[in-house]
Structures are given as C-alpha cells and as structure tokens.
Image (cartoon, rainbow, N blue to C red; front, top):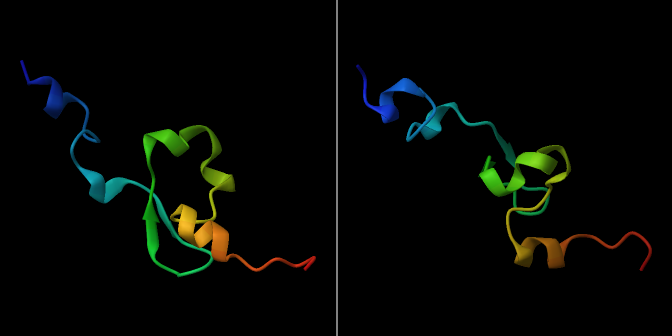
Length: 58
C-alpha cells in the first residue's frame, strides 16, 4: 500500500498547479487553496499590486 502522499499525485508536487501572471507586475502567481473558489477572478499577486492597479475612473 502506498503512503497517502503518493496516492494523490498533486500533494507536494506544485509543478502541476495552474498559474497566471499578475495584472500589475507580471510575476507568475501559482494557484493556492485559498483562491480555489475564485481563481478566475484573481488578478493580483499581492495587496501591494492591488493598490497599484490602474484606476480607470480617476
């Protein structure tokens, strides 16, 4: 019987996680469990980048 860590190929192997660039700085953001429910809406890698975003109405 395999250990639990080998049964789930995703566990500990972050190479297979999706990623996308930050809208402000362009650095790659790797999927996080906290973003699981809204991964499509995540645009910024950090709070600092979110604050630097372009304000179209200002």
